Every structure is written in C-alpha cells, then in structure tokens.
Length: 189
Image 1 (cartoon, rainbow, N blue to C red):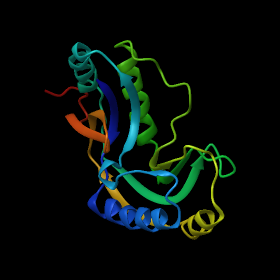
Image 2: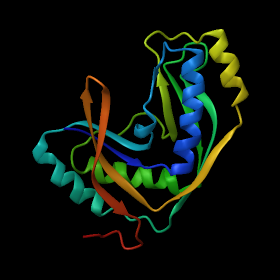
Image 3: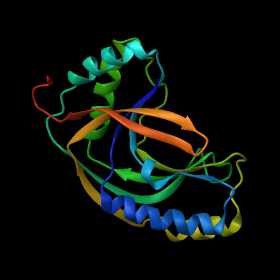
Image 4: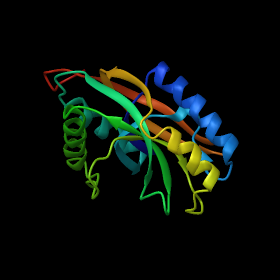
C-alpha cells in the first residue's frame, strides 16, 4: 500500500483551483497537471508499506492530539525547487503554527511505527503540476505571474486523513482509509 497523511480542501478552494488549472492547462499541456479531485495538503508522505502495517499506522495516528481546528488560506503560486528548473508548481498554504505542529506530531507518531522521518522542512502546499523536463515556458510563466499573490480561498480544517494512493492508467486515485477529527485528548476510538 502507498500511504500518506493529508488535510482535505474545501469545495470553494477546489473550485477556484479547478478554474486556475483549466487556464494553465490551456497555456501549456506539457506539465502533468493534477486532477482537481486529488488536491490535498500533504502532512506526511508515508510511502509503500506492507498491508499488515496499516492498522499499526492507524493506531499511531489515533494518538495524535490536535487541540484546535486549523485555519488555512490558499494563496499564490510557486515552484519547487525554483522557477528556473521547476519540478513542481504549487499553490501556497498560509497557516498558523498549529499546522507545522500537527505535521511534527504525525511524524513522531509514525516514526514510532518505523516510518522514516522527513529530512526536509515541512512546507505546506497544494501540488498543481509536475514537470518531466524542468523547463517553464514563457507563456506559462506570464500567466502564473498574474496569480503570484492571488487568494484561492480560506477554510477551517478540523480533521486529517490517512490516505491510500493507487496508480492507474488514468492517473493516481486516492482513497480515504480513516479520518481523524481533531481533539484535545489525543485519544480517539
């Protein structure tokens, strides 16, 4: 199983980013544009694990306490690693310290299950496209510049999810295996 932990996005944010993706796709079809149905905020990428490890991962995540809902603002577009040699186009996430704290707590819980810790700092974002060749066309660069500080929506997240990713000929398909509502107790059933 290929697993990750994520926050879902609101209908408003998804609709706004769908319009953006449609516009960008018409300018340049070379990047692999994300299906809007698959947009999410990755909290922790777990990767491939044996099926029998999934219940242990779920049990570990049940103990992650998050005392308050997290307010997110989706704003602007950027690139990993940069716009000169982009591998990814993303929409930015502005969030309070509770989001990096959640990511840290999830990572600690999963490290106890034998899942390796991230080596890169947590950088919340929504992946919009991936490049096979790290080259940004000038027309696409010009359109993206228009959205540099655009707000695509705001939302309150009150739960996180354990997700499975399956690769199909039509692209990735994501399934929610379990949702974890935020609590102050750090224990859920």
